[in-house]
Structure formats: structure tokens, C-alpha cells
Length: 146
Image (cartoon, rainbow, N blue to C red; front, side):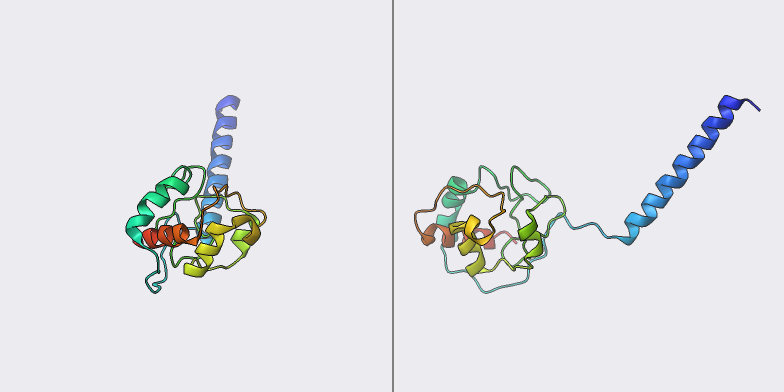
């Protein structure tokens, strides 16, 4: 038997075994989702129509509403009522991933108004919102995108 062919066959067999083992390991560990399944919450207090413009002004440069599509920040489709740091296709800060926080009205407004106070290691860059009315409106708009 040709030595070169034998080495290639053995290399191919080894590669196949390694790939199979990795596939079995990854099958045991479910991948985090790229979409959210929010918990139904009460309707937020803001104005979703006013929230459209506020979202474009304050959030739209970094965030997207299309599942699986992230800009500099994670997409926000289904954020209202979902767990913080949950999407598998975005690398969140450690504090957000470990927070076990539910994005309800109170938490979203608090985060939008002062993200670094809530999670000092957050990656979020934010233009200061003039008051919590814009945050409430943005949150009401986001709640219309489950």
C-alpha cells in the first residue's frame, strides 16, 4: 500500500472521529437561542407611536428589531418580558448575562436612563434621554414587537 495514501486515509479517519465527537458534545449542550420568547406582561405605560421616533433617535443606530441581526448591539425584538443577556448570537457583558433580570417596564426604563449605574460593565453607549417619558415611549414601542 502506498504510504502517502495510508497517511491521508488515517488523517481523514481521525478528522472524521474528531468531528463526530464534537457534534455529539454540542448536541448535549443546547445552543442559546437567537430569538426571544418573552413572558407576557401588562401593557407598558408609554406611547408606542411616540416611541417609534424616540427609538430611531436614541436606539436605532446600534439596535435592530430583526431577529438574528445585530448591529453594534443586540436586536431588541421580543425584549419586553424576556430575560436579560439571553440571546446566543450576541456577546453580553458578564453582569448582564449573570443578572437573571427580566426586562419589564421598571427594569427597561431604569436601564435606558442609566445603563452604567445598573450594570457598570455594560457595553451600551447611550445618549442621555431628556426624561423618562422617552424611555417609556421606547419601551411601549418595543412591547409592540414581541
